[in-house]
Amino acid sequence: MRPHLLLIAAILLLLARPTVAQDEVERCNVAIDIGHTETTQGSTSARGVGEYLFNRTMANLLLNKLHRAHRVDAFIIDGNDMTLQQRTQFAADHHATVFFSLHHDSVQPRYLSTWTYQGKEHHYSAKFHGFSLFISEKNPYPKQSLALAQSLGTQLLDAGFTPTLHHAEKIPGESRPLLDPHRGIYAFDDLIVLKTASMPAVLLECGVIVNRSEELHLTDPKKRARMIQAVATAIERTCPRISLEDHTPTTSRDVH
Image (cartoon, rainbow, N blue to C red; front, side):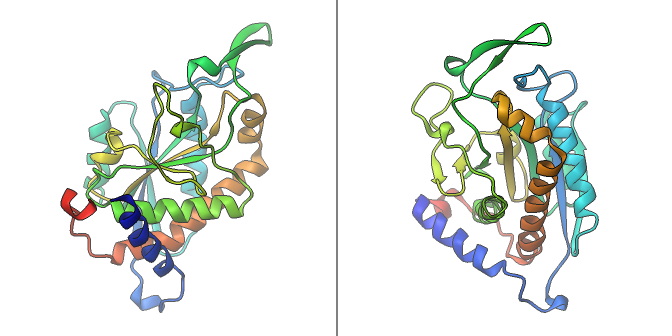
């Protein structure tokens, strides 16, 4: 099942090379989803900062970058007053070509230690670091989702970032099927924003914010800019090609 999906996605990725005449390439429209909300922040960093704040910062940086890109439009989904399904419906209502959700990562409780920072006790872990990418094979466009994830992974690697493979560990809360170890791509079939999106969808965990060193990297303006450039390059190269693909939804029979 998955080797077949990987082969098809690899072919789509090759086709994403920017060698097509300008008049043959469509514009695409990217829905940038800010993971979590102001009231439900998600993970907490090693220094006590809520994940949502990291996600929002990266989403706005990406929006500004994509607004200067060729052939790409973009808008932000800030789901403070939305359910997860309403986020993907909002993307569909605004004619998104792809749904891209931004998050920052943590680890399972067994790997957490405590330390004191500015007089307060916080959890941290030095065991894992790096980015990860997720797609859902229950999304109607798993091939295109994987092709975009592969492009993102390639650009992040080229920019000097490394993937984390800890989500594949066979422990409670993890055990995610690892589709592409080199690029850190996993299947998370029942993740709501991925499986309910009516367009290709990818979720990026930018890094592990409970790792004290990586938290500093993820707040460094130069490193953020480098990551945003990598993500924007992948989207700009791949998304217009996805908009030209036959968007007949893939049935489970096609995937398997």
